[in-house]
Image 1 (cartoon, rainbow, N blue to C red):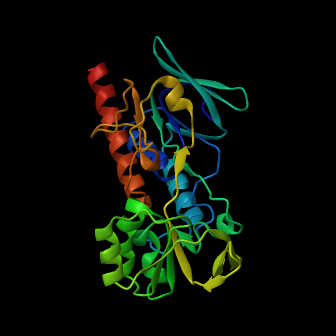
Image 2 (spheres, rainbow, N blue to C red; image 1 turned 60 degrees about the vertical axis):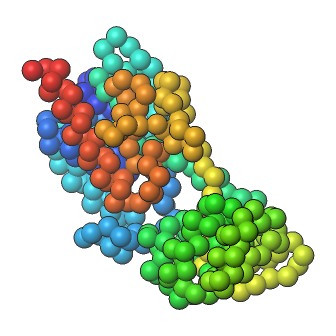
Length: 302
């Protein structure tokens, strides 16, 4: 840890997006502090996929490699702590942590991710990221040709249906309530032999996170090998909101093409601001943020 609490950039969140931003900035000789609480959203996921050179490795293994490479740049520091507050000051921003420390910087990056809201279904949370998944690109190949359920309704369910149908033809739509599809959507689902089940789900029976059966409120159960689910979410950190950063209508931090939030000097990257939720996209956005911030800093100093 560097002796001073003053930095060019503070990055809140030290997973893939945050570390990618730190690498870009470290390579530009920027004094950077990464604050991370050590609870990435993919911590239950057995393997990460669809990321060149790292396909099939565990998320923790990729993070460890990334962290060791980023910290090889001597101007980058990393602390295991939780950022709990932030404020604007005359020189930039202050960020306070759970341990009582306060750090200042000219720019702040939020790479804080999102928090999925688990449904009130027994066993669901234990399977999340293992056999109950969110993304056909991240997980679909591994569960191809298996009996698959889609726990979703309406537009979100219909969005998933053709992508899952490309990977397996043994699909059922589990709306967990009365279905809210249009007549055209129902017709298309029927044409592709996708039944719609409107019964309420009470339990996901599993073994070590791997789905065995879905149990319904009426006591019936069905065998499944894998499930997709479209979950609501909230921002993992409330500091951007406290600073005045606006959210879009879907709940993501509003950013422009340069990942700038609605507050000057504050940036966001990764899952908190990108709808396409994947490791590769997080890294890409973090790399871009680092470059944009360095460009702003060099122009201010030149």
